[in-house]
Amino acid sequence: MSRPPTMNDVAQAAGVALKTVSRYVNGETNINPELATRIRDAIVELGYRRNLAAASLRPGRSSRMIGLIISDLANPYYSTIARAVETSASAAGYLLITASSEESGENHDRLVDRFIGQQVDGLIVVPPARPARSWTDVTPPVPPLVVIDRPADGADGDTILADNEGGAHAATTALTEAGARRIAFVGDTLALYTMSERLNGYRRALEDAGLAFEEDLVVTGAHSAEEAAGIVLRLLHDQRPDAIFAANNRASIGSVLAFREAAKALPLIGFDDFESARLGTPAVSVATPQIEEMGRLACERLLARIEGDLSPSATTVLPVELILRGSERGTTS
Image (cartoon, rainbow, N blue to C red; front, side, top):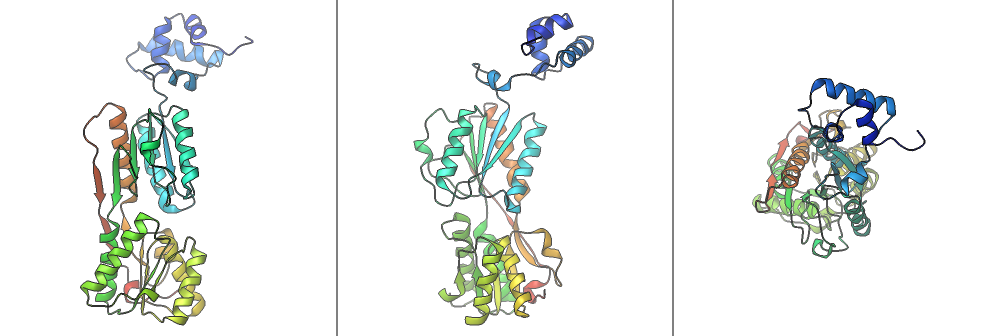
């Protein structure tokens, strides 16, 4: 056969109606087992492969694909979210396509347009730090949308966030209760909603403890562990804090690296858990969001919308758990 086999070819080879083949390849299970076996054998013999792209362009048909746009796939925080979304999507028979915006508004918008052009059934997105456009400016029709981790301007869809302020407040309070009085805040750019919320929680905890908020102890712009390590080393030398609140997982890792280089360890609590947190003595204490739950819930809400749920959009804020492993009283490398 010089051309790719079609469903008509499969139907003829299996001796069944075209409609039966169509039902089989679309995943329907209420098919006579004998007919299903004949169809399967014909598909294998002919080398038939369904054209999902063409099928998705037909009115009323689904691509069975979901698009996920995250900020940085190299960050374990977002790769954990992606894995949770993929697990839920796969269980429902959907293929997940994941891409990273790298915190670029232009990249994010390009990916949104590309996914919509690919006829995905729905989108889950982490908005970039500096969006280039509002969702109200996206050319319709826009598929069902769920926004995670950070709010999005003009987004018509469900939003799922972590209690960043509450988690940072709990972490900083644990440090003050352990005796710290000059606590440094080390994190990424405050253009990130999550980071500004964590700074709010840190500031509120200091106020609750009757401590002054010192601008010189707040350093942002640490996007990598190496950058965070350099910041902490400078803080140790210039400001002499007596504890560190590391506002993301990379800041936590950078803090531990800095402690090792300086041969000086301070009480430390980080935001976001990370795999190596348990390797030190003591292990690193963390305030950690329910990352897997965020991904699972995002996919669950999106699938409900795809299936026709028209209830009003809602924002869900997931709690952040404080896990004290000992480093809040002092850590070593």
